[in-house]
Image 1 (cartoon, rainbow, N blue to C red):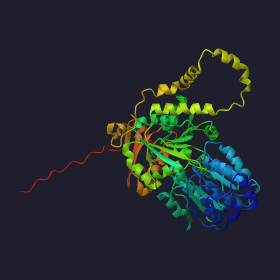
Image 2 (cartoon, rainbow, N blue to C red; image 1 turned 135 degrees about the vertical axis):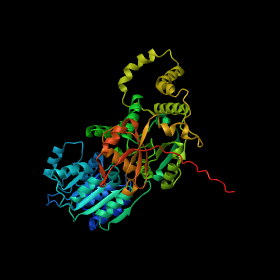
Image 3 (tube, rainbow, N blue to C red; image 1 turned 180 degrees about the horizontal axis):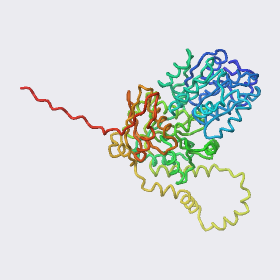
Image 4 (cartoon, one colour; image 1 turned 90 degrees about the vertical axis):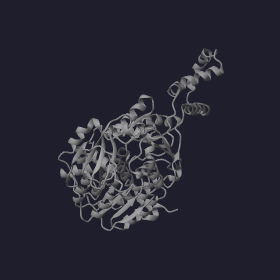
Length: 550
């Protein structure tokens, strides 16, 4: 067996990772660690979440820290607070027996004063989000002129969140002698441009570009109308009594709405989104990791860096704009040799998207029918009966003294009556909820012209023209990041996005159309002044009549 001791790591680090449960390196670690330990050239690693990227760059960085030098020697940039803290904790674990290595996280949503104080004590390695790192640079509280290594982790996500200009500004303030390590799940055009601009002949390693858990994951799709998404979600949750899942929504507003509805109906759910404070986020994640919370509703951005074992399902409440994001999402289940299920809700006009995902996935996605109310009640009932049958009473001896009175109280009921009452009490909500429940499945031929696409759940959208497009390196997911950057912390829902060569169209919740237009006034993108206008309605071209020659 190929082990970590075979790739040049020191004994102190081997002891630390052995305590962490590391046995043998993953494919990305096998190819990355030896290179980073022996070669100072730039490096690009393409791999999905859960493949061990943090250890791939973290172990060599820790081993190469010079404890006699108190200056900042490495900077790791990442997109979210969650990932920033996760990387920091991993680095501290790696260096447990290696010496007094200072690892300092800097991120928004926390006290900048506390972070400045932490940087003064000992900071060999700084892990940070682009916004806070740039803020500290402007305050002259960070000095990167001596750093040896710069890591761009989840680089594709940092771009999609609109951090391109921040990243450029930070890179310009770093040592010219550094090596740049870029890790990403995908390699869009903008990432290639960063590599070309800031890296010198980098070595590239691509590992598991497809779903790393593909063999352990079943992929199911349910074709429904958009207005029935929530009903379908409840049925999938109810038909799987032991579900432990992340539900991916498109916007922050949608995550809140879905989570609030589920909680109001008694489900053990909560939402993870950008409007939460760090303390709120930590509380939710702690509950979810301990399985005290079994349904987490999140956006792709908020879920970055979440690495939770034993998820039974990943649910795509909406299809992502980028098929690669589907692969990234569903790779979170089916780990550690366990089976996982990826569930996707879509309508009939998204068939081409589904075909593109199947092409990238390399396997068909099985079409399933949303279960009926009767099927759900049967599944829940027999699951509860099985639980009762398998239950072993080892801790409730204290109730023994009450049992004679209970037996006497219920002696007039027969065994059949007791069972009937138990079932009625336990399943009243389900039976009432699914009484006369309609079939919400769409047939393959049924079109969404019945109002599904136009109304999008009854919500009105305004279509805007923006004067930049793919020529400026913008993709659909980048547009989401740009909108979130210029309009932060707003309950703004985005509809369809259409990216053309030199311009784009974006549909915005009509309630916010005036605010959307004002947000882009006097703003620029890549040195070009942004122009935003309400787009003219699409008109079908008129047919030209031609006269027949005699």
